[in-house]
Length: 110
Image 1 (cartoon, one colour):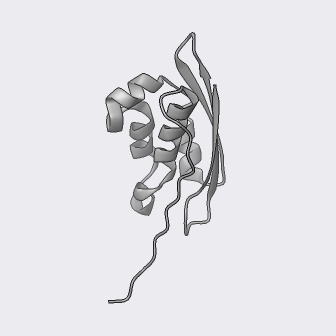
Image 2: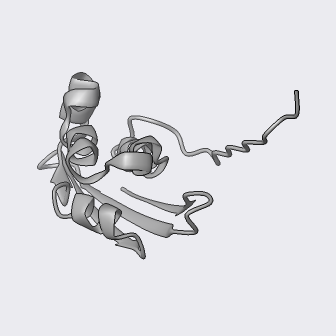
Image 3: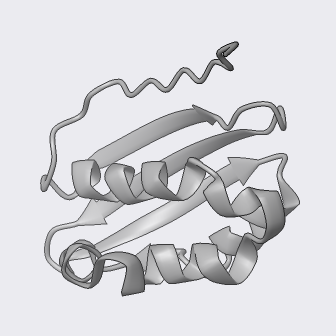
């Protein structure tokens, strides 16, 4: 199975495309990432192949989220890209259903 995600991270203007292919026999997901963000490029080198069930069972200690901790710092710590990579791996492996995700953040006057 395969899954793709097109992620516009926010005010930084960076765009990330995630391509995940899943090998049922090996139970491994191949993660390919195209992005204009240097930090996500660095992260992508750490997560080229992941085991979806391991990622789910380990949660924030899995390869994806620990890769995010190693590569993303400062204001990028809150980046939405890692969670979307995590979800794309779940979809490609049949552990989640695909659904469009949207986040809209507005500053409210008090």
